[in-house]
Image 1 (spheres, rainbow, N blue to C red):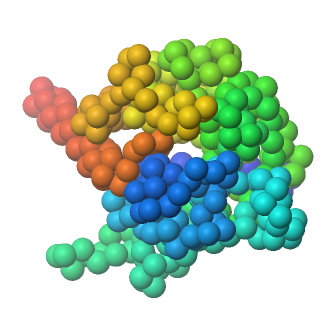
Image 2 (cartoon, rainbow, N blue to C red):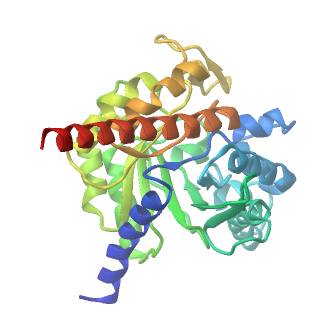
Length: 342
């Protein structure tokens, strides 16, 4: 077995290890753009939240910290809309543009270091609780990679694009609209010998297919076939559609499943506004009430996408703890019953 084979096997195992060390489920952060706007950033720009990599990296750092304090295990970089082409169109050189792409990861890493308060190095939080005990949990940085449609800022998200990432713990290929783009990313990972665990998350409008109409099972099978992909799932999709998609994905992969829905509203690309969808948006309460069901259906990474907030993530973390505690109680009860019968 070659060194590359050893790495890709270890990469998948690494993510599963982080899941185990977090208690069975990793909490992913929520929306970046929504929170930047809440902190006063003007994102009426084709670069969207990536604009703040140029103008206000301190605000990005603040949002990362808010999510970590809310209980997130994974913070995603503000690079979904970041591309060399986008930065260069603003008059930046290629070197400056590449530095900004790396800066997205660096800002997230800085936030992690502040959160850890110097108590630990590497991807773990070691923080002292009020009772004096020390709690350790994974705290990871995922480099966000959006589709080419994100660069166009028109919502099309149907054509492949590539990005270089430096230094993250994970690479999150997000809002993938079809099987073709997933295949392109698989080729990218293999051809460039990317030695960082990746996840593929698709987006859906109907609860059975990716945005392009490709069955979610076909899309997930592509991700499953790539040894460098450590998890597969769904993001930026209405909460009411998640459970069916989860069940479909589970049919074709045993890899960890990641889900981080939006609030169920619809984004209007022409006006760059969110509006209530036909099925209705989900309140924070409705959104979080689904978390236990997603956990039971097999999700092991859960968070939020557009329009969610640190409050949403805090509630997700609490709901996951409650769900796992309830499952443990049931298992314990079953064990007791079995012993009693014996």
